[in-house]
Length: 375
Image (cartoon, rainbow, N blue to C red; front, side, top):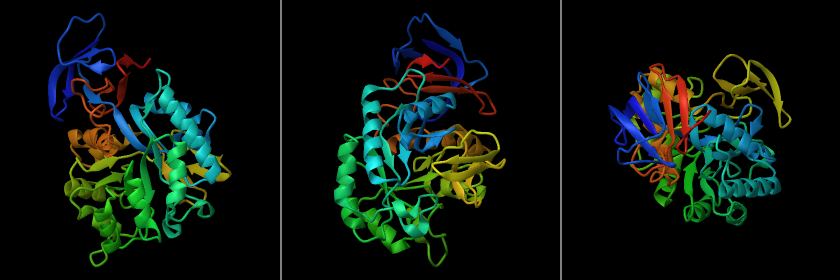
């Protein structure tokens, strides 16, 4: 297949007017005769987006079980996300074990052609601080426990790719040591001070869960986890860029401090995302959409993101982030966080042919999933 005449965001994240050749499920290094072609005149051709922190979309969340992950994957693909990590909340442990096994079986078997590809599992819960738990139920949190994590890892058949830990808790050091053997360790939902966070980074934590959210505010005398992340050379940081979770000025400052190579835009989308304004009940808790871009609990506190990752890219550009940086932060950087950047995340020869085509307003016009146009 040939995609011609588009403005392509190339593998080095520069824009050029060129053609993209696809052979099977991969991007080809060579021009070739093509039976099928698509004229992308007037459109940007961008890498498919990689959302490493998404709980769900519409009325489903991935860890609802019973095929929910496939439903979410289908919704995400329609919005321009071509790869993702199904992300769990803190939940009943035995149910977490069961659904992790279900999701790992889906990953191994492969999803239908119209679905974004799950690349692994993100365990946002249960090893979080009660004081910074956000929308995670307090009674379902767990203290750091290496044996508990070992059971989760076994149930997930090695597909756990990212785990959030509050490093100030007893047992966190040992848990970080165990997680980093097979997955990336993220610090988040934490009341850690600067020194505690820096020690955790030195120990092997390499990522931060939704920077600025569910952590101590960054102050000039008490920088906290956010300050430790910005002051560490090799730490990547998630950022929810919807204008409600993080102020536009803080988005710009994060990109300036970290660069697009260390910012991973995430949707943090939850059940309720994409739905009309109104009140909804999910897993026994009342949620509402009130015209904003986030999903909120009944008391007005943030429950999670309300849109696609592409919406976050569009907002980042609106806030003053250059297009190439915003897209890189939603494609190659998150792919690198989970060790998948050799296969996905940029338009380069040999990588999986996951692409999105957008107009000048970053409105989605077409999606290519694994070498095929999504109908």
